[in-house]
Length: 391
Ligand SMILES: Cc1cc2nc3c(=O)[nH]c(=O)nc-3n(C[C@H](O)[C@H](O)[C@H](O)COP(=O)(O)OP(=O)(O)OC[C@H]3O[C@@H](n4cnc5c(N)ncnc54)[C@H](O)[C@@H]3O)c2cc1C
Image 1 (cartoon, rainbow, N blue to C red):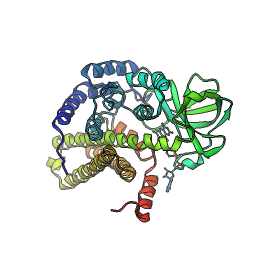
Image 2: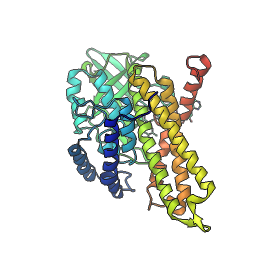
Image 3: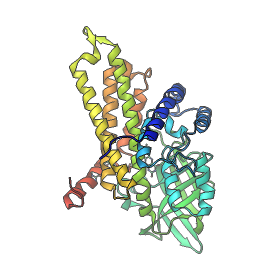
Image 4: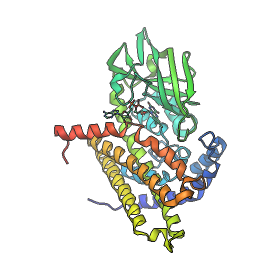
């Protein structure tokens, strides 16, 4: 077992840390608390800087304009840029576009790549991924899927309602999961342009954290015609492809969340080393050192799980159990770490003089999105009990 970071990745990691510290974190002051997003002109200027620095879409191969990193390199670089919640969009590797790029690279036809993937990699369009539905539709349990596509001649007629589609406001295409002719077994992914007749972006859902550039939206599909050549992959491949998308996408969430947790803890360390209470620095009190110990260990455990899952993916092995473990552990540690950091910083931690209150609200989604903690624990436990996976 080799824990040494390759020299080329380590050098890139240092450059990324420096770039995020000097070019990205200072922009956080522009974050608009009213709208829950960054001003788009600031984002665009920063994106131009990222491109000029050669860090654009870091997860892609060099041929596609990225850094040509393997899974482990991606873990290390993403956890650096995750230190700022505004960085992933600026580097063009935010959810859902980053996962959608991976999916399209895997399953899109040349025409679909031309239409969607290439502009997505260049950052000239955005996309959404619509799986979740309002009750009684699909959420934690995908078998409740209601959205349906009826095959009529050489077209599909799509009907259904989705919600929590991240980035849908202003997106050009939505990847929609739907049954075909009422058959769950034939669940398929459809590429729907947001200009299609019968498509409505009903609303941006009001929520506690950031909205990103395109919010988290509720969508309606009423008799939307989708031509056959806008099926992604083949009819009936929806769930297989969603696993291909969600596994690595959950892991890239873990990488970004590791960066955010590390930054939160380091903000608390700075405060605790400087502020004095009861005749000694806060950091000198053992009760506080134990809090740092708990959070630092949690972050490290989560990151090691993330690296192991990344290594399994990189070596072509089944990583589903470890991805669930990482998703559960890292999301829970992020929430615990940010909460602890606020506690250590006292009133200042709760105020907007520090970014921790924003991290706190953003972090809360991590335990729900892409499978709630309870669902990942169910999967982990089932695999253990059945003997499919052993500890
Ligand atoms: C910020 C954010 C962004 C999102 N982006 C997208 C997106 O882009 N595209 C998309 O399709 N979806 C997206 N989602 C939706 C997300 O994937 C769902 O919220 C999630 O899968 C849970 O589904 P649900 O909300 O319907 O919860 P429900 O299915 O209603 O579950 C509610 C709760 O029930 C409990 N529960 C569920 N199953 C079990 C079980 N087996 N055992 C014990 N308890 C259980 C859990 O506590 C769970 O939180 C996003 C969500 C958030 C918060």
